[in-house]
Image (cartoon, rainbow, N blue to C red; front, side):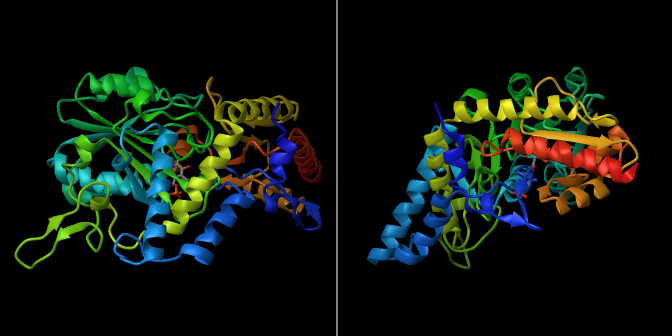
Length: 405
Ligand code: PMP
């Protein structure tokens, strides 16, 4: 039996006060808090092995390189990547998606070729493709969503043409919590020789991700949403694509040989890791993965399911509260509106009670436009949250309602 109270105690920030009230942190979809072992792991790099990696002949550099490459191995094992060199370390999901958009479009697409995204995407899985529309002449198409906030996959086959080269969709929606049937999408796409990229920013911390089982061609996520540090992220990519894609950035580390007549590129994964990487962040991310694996993904999923069910059940008792996004399959997020109260006012007043939620469009403006709302209040959960915190959220909402009555 897992003792989640003890696990919660490993997160120093969760015992702090906000306006003299205990912090109720329900903004985990924006970023998760960090356990002590992650904070210590990053500090320990700087205290004991800090040195630039890969190019040093000296002892410290070798230790730091080894720790960095071990972190890559930990990440590869965590997502069940077939090869370590298919795991690229980036700054985060945003950089991972930009990398694929730029390099895939330059290496595999002609003007007029098409990429399909969905109406449920975070801006970071829309704008990089729009940049490729402007600079490469690719065409962006969109899978619509239903009123419940699910992808309307019945419309996908009609969007696909012989010019469709890639489909890029979120595994889990950050705005509504919808879990998308990505395996079905990948199956359908591969039957037509189309590559698939999955934005896993909101899935990796909630769902067991096995890139071989999914058979996705690319999978992106951020360390900071997985209890790791900020400024480190991951792009898994199949070597059959990565080997043929041009580098996203040029610089040190990513080359084999440089001259003014001919420069050759390094092998995977270094071809896509120009410049000094965030080795301290990568090593601390591996510590976060060790921490999560110690709890067990299944235990964590079960706890978060229970929290989500309890939150739905309790908030449904509030008169005038409307859930936004009622997909059958959801993870981590409850988005809602309360009659006659602007989400921003609700967020500001909950904050005064020590309750941290997110309000607004959550970087998913097309979702809000489709549902005809300016934004939502979003409570998002992690395994360290408690039913008591959900009770405090409910009491807080009721209090705001009274003040607005
Ligand atoms: N995609 C989704 C679904 C997200 O929720 C986020 C973060 N809110 C991102 C992409 C971007 O992640 P990051 O800002 O860490 O690069």
